[in-house]
Length: 121
Image (tube, rainbow, N blue to C red):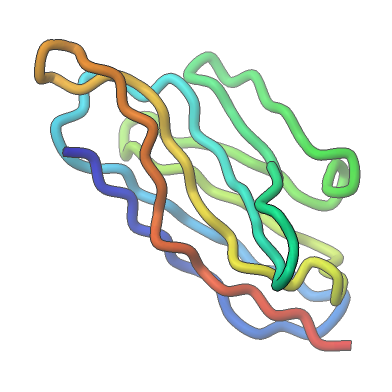
C-alpha cells in the first residue's frame, strides 16, 4: 500500500504565504507524478500543480506565478509553496502520487487526506 501524509495547511491573511508538504511512503517502486489538487466548498476538485519524476512542472493558469511545486526524490516528498494568497485560494488541498508499487510493479494512484487552507481577507 501507498500512503500520503500532508502537512502545512492553516489560516493565513490575504497576501501571506504557506508551504504544504506531502510525504509518500509504503511499498513504492517508483513515483512518476506528484501533484496538488484543491477543492473549495461546493466546487469540483481541480488541479493546482504537478511535477514529474524528471522535474517537468504543470500549473493551473490561476496559480502560475504565485505557487511553486517542487519535489525531493530522496525523501519521496512534494512541496507546494504558495505566495500572495487570496481568499479565493481557500480550499482543502489534496496531495496525489502516481507510480508503481514493489508488488508486481502494479500501478497506484493515491491521495492524501486533505489539508485545509483558509485565507482571510
